[in-house]
Structures are given as structure tokens and as C-alpha cells.
Image (cartoon, rainbow, N blue to C red; front, top):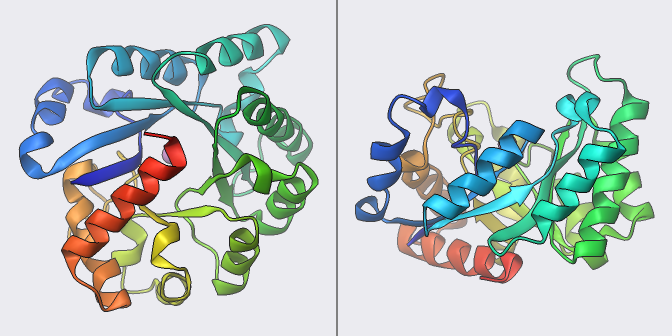
Length: 254
Ligand code: NI
């Protein structure tokens, strides 16, 4: 069965049909979802989703673009949520230099704090890194991220960077971008990454695969991602689904 390793079903674009959508997953072959917190409100909603749906697990963290809302008080809440039963990771956390705000210093600061938190609560970390390859890697190495373990979500760098993350024994979240015609660099990277290190993800509601590019994404579109990976690796669709599920269960301890 398909393991969705990264989605945001707390997003308001799912308000109109969240219940029906999530209820349809099982019969479409999707049996586990990790809902990923990106803001304080998102983390709160993630905890609620894990209570409401047996097949939803949660990750607690603040996206680099949202770290402006963090302070010592609410950082304590993150730590408390991490102790809950169905919370399986810290994240998403990392660096995003695509937008000028918040500035790099603030982003780095809270990234380091969240890495330290992951080490403290002994959970793997979900990394978000966009246009910030070098700084992300430096901070991860300085914080011995290899000992914490985790996944680089929506991996979008080239093969050379994949090698660096492999050296830390990290996993790679591969999503809809792999189906895009212009994703040549990413396809080369996926060819290079061992199958045992790949997780399926959508980042729903974002990054819908072809032929739904630009539309609202959901885990129902994961078969397009799995088929692309199967084509690149020269293995069957079923093997991709099975291996990525085993990988995700190993990483998240499920
Ligand atoms: Ni995300």
C-alpha cells in the first residue's frame, strides 16, 4: 500500500471536502499518511488530525518561512506535542532563501533549534531546503544530523548534493516534480539514489504531478509519482510502492 510521507491536510483548501477525501484513501490503496506541521496553527491541527484518523501520523515543526512566529514560550509547545503518541518526526524545518523574509539569520537560528529538538526527543527530522543547499548542509553537518536521521523533503537538488545527504544516511522525499518534463536534474538524481532511500510524497496541496500540474494536489495522485520512479529505475510500479512503504516505516518507526 502507498505510504504518503508528506502532506498538509490541515490546509484550508481542504476545508470543503477534507472528510470525504481522506475517507476515500484506503480504497485507492493509500494506507498511511504523515501530516506535516508548517506553522503553530498547522501543528495544532496536525495533532487533531492524528486523533481523528487512525491512518494519519504527524510531524511537528515550523517551516523556515513561518519562523517569525516562534518564541521561547511557543517553542515549549512544540516540544510537548513531540511527546504525543502519533507524532513521528520533527519538521518541516530548514532553510528557504526563495523569499527575502524572514532573513537567513533568523531561519538558521530556528533550524538549529529544531534540529537540536529532534535529537532531544529522538525523532527523525523532515528537512525543507530551497535555494539554500550549502547552508542547509553546513548546519546539518555541524549538528550531526546523520545521528538524528531523517528525510530531505521534496528533494530538488542535483546528484552531487544527493551524495552529501546519502553520506548522512538521509532519505529523499520524491514528489510531483519528478513527472515534470523539465526535471532532468532531478531525474538524474533519482537514478543515482538507491531505491532503499526513497520515500513517496506529495506536499499536498502543492506540487501536483502531471497531468494535474498547477491544480490542488492530494495523495490520490501518488501513483503518477510512483510510476515515474518505476520508469527511471526500471522496476515495477508495485516494487516502488512496496519498497517506499518499507522505507517510510523504517524511518518513522511504524
Ligand atoms: Ni511541506
